[in-house]
Length: 262
Length: 249
Image (tube, rainbow over all chains, first blue to last red; front, side):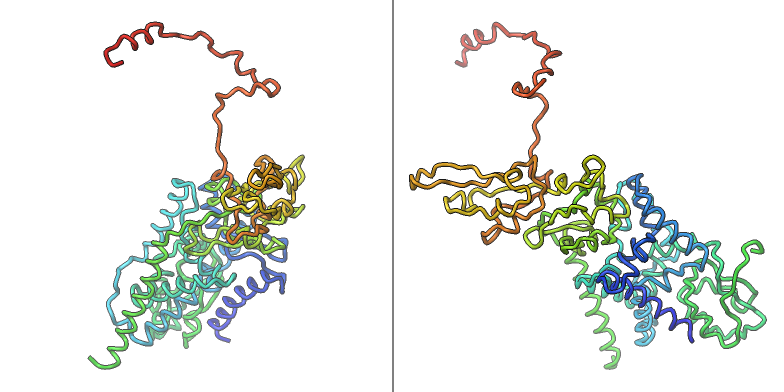
């Protein structure tokens, strides 16, 4: 099966587990993506949110810290930004926006705004500094991810407006603006995924330089070695596996990265 | 311009205008709404910065009392609150919302007595009676809030007063004692008037504060603060005479 389809199933299934868990129908996941209880016992928390709260208040219960550590370790060890491609509901919106953008050829228009890809790292740093200075979790309080995921999980209609705004922003204003230029959570997972193990590997020998992978990749910069030399993708990769799906020549595949060899 | 291009740019303009309008409206929304936090909540500033917005407290509540603030609700998005006129807090003995909180934004030590959760020490707010619109203050017999109160005769008691207008009836006036009121809002929920004439406000909104300069002589050791007081009075002896002699008078 195509990785992309498995990925879509994963995104929808996690939201579904949350909805059913909160309705009390299927007691697996309770809460939302900020913090939840797995099987009513294992706490899971968003490490970025916990970090912000910790910087804001300098005290937090051990339950949230344990939950944040679990999630932190999972994403730090598994694949870079696996959250973005396999869990985050915003990805469904921005991928749809990208699809519309290409389909109706809005992509030929010039970008309204020119936001550099490094903006998200400044935004990440700013969020952490402001959390400390203002004594409140700065990004959490304005988080569009929070509004959307809670809107879906707890069904509130106001979130539809936010979802539409994100769609419009990505379709007409900035190409892949939210996920690959603005989102500090994505930047956070890119940072902690620096040493994660499962990566897309490029084997130059098999590559025919058709560049299909660069067309579908949402973070084209990570594929800069395609057609040139062997190597693993950088941690900005959202591990969506689209390049693996599309590569006809077996030049791109998920494999385990040995960090010692570099 | 072809029709296709026209439709394309039309769609673009309409979408941007709609989304922009929505964001604009939400950003400039300014409706006044008093909200109550769940039991055990820290003070508002600390609570809203410690809350991770996971809704575990909301889901722990067996009465669906708690709701999550939506985008544009005039409070930090995603934080829990409740509206007693709709569903009050039923003051469960085991206060399930408090231990559900993973971050400690709901602090169990604030609702505990001798290390055990104690619903009577919940302080989510305090009830306030609008004496103009409470029918009991008109002389009509109504004790809906008094009967609804879980701490009957403590948090709300009835004050009896002679009704001079009729000269043969009594006023049964509900009075709130803030020392016992938990702010659960069952009184507001039960109130018979169109808009509740007894309602719960956050304690920092509803209650005044007295400076510590007063001496409560009727309390035990109430006058102990007088012991170190400076009793030497400096009188300005000439002041009154000067005042009388001045031209101004």
